[in-house]
Image (cartoon, rainbow, N blue to C red; front, side, top):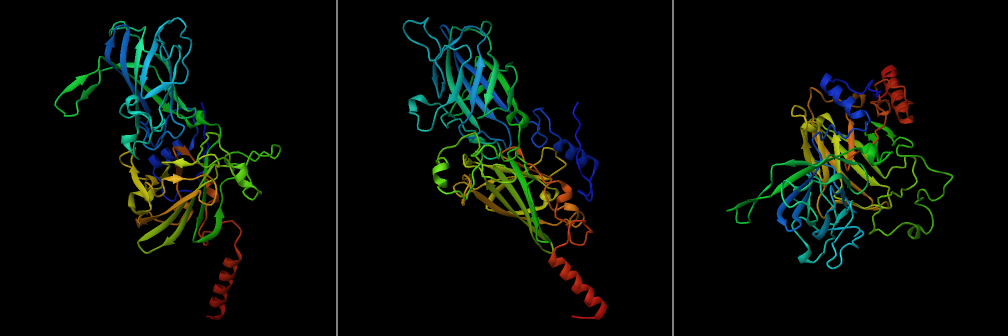
Length: 452
């Protein structure tokens, strides 16, 4: 059993037991593939046998990304399994295996793949039409379900031989694996379900699969990478202190290994940094104190009578990745009164119907939906306008700052609550700035001697 200690003193001004329990749940690391902000999110693989062939069957395999905000970016998904018998793949449409394997026992028509454990990838955009089926050929990229359900689906067709030719003799594959594009997903066993039904284009006829089985894959950030991939910094108009990302939030600089990070001031930088059009799953980050590929900065900008305003900036420190279709998930109690989001799309996430404190933000298509690699253009920003709820609104005790932030579904490292910018009159033990000392002195002189 794992225990989690969470520093929450001075963090909440008012908190219900339910909210506290939820906060503790979100703050504890676990190897379990469970996300409290997307509790039923998963990737489901549906295998539909469309018809039987003399030595096997023809099937359509569909991958559904039912995760609200976690998407599959380039270089895309990779799907693998192990055959239950000695099946082979005669032909594929909309996808391909990465290896053919040993097909020496076939003298004439060679199968597409003879491996016991084939690995399948999507085809690239621009594939000839006679090699495509619906929802294929996007390079394995799957959007999140909230951003665009139409592109959160991927399919390929497979003709299987040396297999069963009926519901009684066919055997489901086992040991399914999914990389999207790296590790992190764990797939359960295939489960036979009711056959899928399909409606024709004119919607006047319904057909049915001969047999259907589903495989459910869930994600664990702990399995995906051992270190975090993003961090959060904070600032406010009422305190000149800027709270940076925690030192070594995503790792520390390796001073004994030159080249482990990139100094942006180095000469001939362009010759060291990879081409901007090529993405690599292995980050090559700018040398910083936090060493994170992504930093999210939350700045409490303005205070009005009935509203307050926040500026949100996402900065890419990764020279190896252009983040396409990026998204951000932010948890804050005032999202139930979010009035306007400038230059970002947004949607409320309510995994628990009685609580509306989480929002998903993402870029506007063809405007800022691409977060380019580290450099002068490697950032996107927006402003959020909230309406105050006088019963709960306060700038005290860090209330104006987010409780949790995710970038592309990855939990970002937050500063410790005791480091949050405090109001000048809260009696914080933090050192007082010169400006505050001068203002305090002038106020005291006015009180004592009547100076104006």
